[in-house]
Image (cartoon, rainbow, N blue to C red; front, top):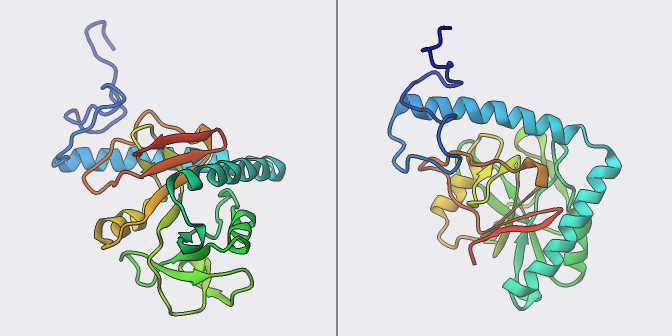
Length: 229
C-alpha cells in the first residue's frame, strides 16, 4: 500500500461504505442490492460474535441476567399497562443461551396474566401465538422448539422478543429469519413488543433496512434501554 492508497473497506461494495460512516447512518430507502448484501454479511458476522459471547456465559451468570431482566419487566409493565388480569403476554421458550424468563412467566400466570408463546406455524410466514400456561401439553415445533400443542391462537397485548443484538434506536438484531418483523408488519392488533437480551449485545447500529421494524422497548439486565413511549 502506498501513502496515497486508502485502506480496504470491510465491505465488498464501495457505494455501501457502511463501516466508514457515522454509526447512526442508514439509507432509509436501501434500494442498492449490493448495499443490502453487504449489510446482511455484516449482520451474519455480528450475529455469530454475539451468540458466541452469550454462549460463553456460565449458568450462574445467565441466571443472574434472567433474574435482573425479570425484575425490570416486573417494574416496567405496571407503568405501561393497567389491569394485569386482562393482558395477554407472549413470552418465549429459551434457546441458544437466551435469558430464561420462564420462572417470571410462571409468576405472571399465578398473578392472573394470560400467557402465550410464539409459534412458526408456516415457515417464512408471520408467527402465530398460542396460549400457554404452566403444565400445558407441548409438542415439537419449528427448529424442534417446544410449542403449545393446542391449535387455538390469541392476539397478545405484549410480546417479548429475544435479542441477539440491539441499538439505541430501538432496532433488534435477531437470528436472521425475519419472523418478528413479518409478524409486526401484518398484525391487525400489533402487540407492544419488548426486546430482551444482554446489555453487552448493544451495537452502535444494526444499519436498519426497510423491512426492519422498530421495537416498542428494550430491556436488558441493566434496565430499560429504549422506549417509544
